[in-house]
Amino acid sequence: MTDQPPETRPIRVLVCDDQELVRVGYATILSAQPDMEVVGEAADGRAAVEAARRLRPDVVVMDIRMPELDGIEATRQIAGPDVGSPARVLVVTTFNVDEYVYQALRAGASGFLLKDSPPAELVGGVRTVARGESLLAPTVTRTLIGRFAERLRPTDTSRPARDEVVRSLTARELEVLEQLAAGRSNAEIAAELVITPETVKTYVSRILAKLGLRDRVQAVVLAYRVGLVSPADEVPRRP
Image (cartoon, rainbow, N blue to C red):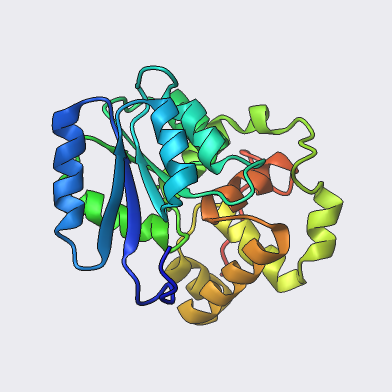
């Protein structure tokens, strides 16, 4: 891999889809971007896992329904909690089903996009995920994770328990995490806590680093999983 700093080198993308027309179309669109480089393609889940390990892309564009190994399991092997050097995965699928989204996020995906989205959204999605942000809109994240929160409640030894999370973060960082879990954007959090959006980004980065998380989606899932917030909670807005 190139030694260029992350802010100057292209985003390395691996495109995975069993339909050649779709795969080539994505690769063509992404390759045309000055800040992106398509480093490989894969037509099934096993090939996707092998290519991700060999090529070490920054972002993997992953279909859910693929032969040999489905996209959710491939995502788990590429970006799951037990992966030493995970890639960020953007799931792109024709199936707008909450269960698929939930499973993909639990497997380690950083975002979710429908195949009928315009090319500009695909390009923007890759950039968003590459920056370590979640692609799902905050309100969608809240609704989705809230709906499946009960499945997140059992103790997960791969993530810190509630007390450890509380000990790891400052009072302000906990406030920001609660706001994230409530589905609020950086701008909304900034307005709510009377700080700048840049300061919010700094707090989010610290939260992710302290808790060993990759992006905002994982932070939201963790907040629900350890019981820091619940679907019934409504983080109050300041009067």
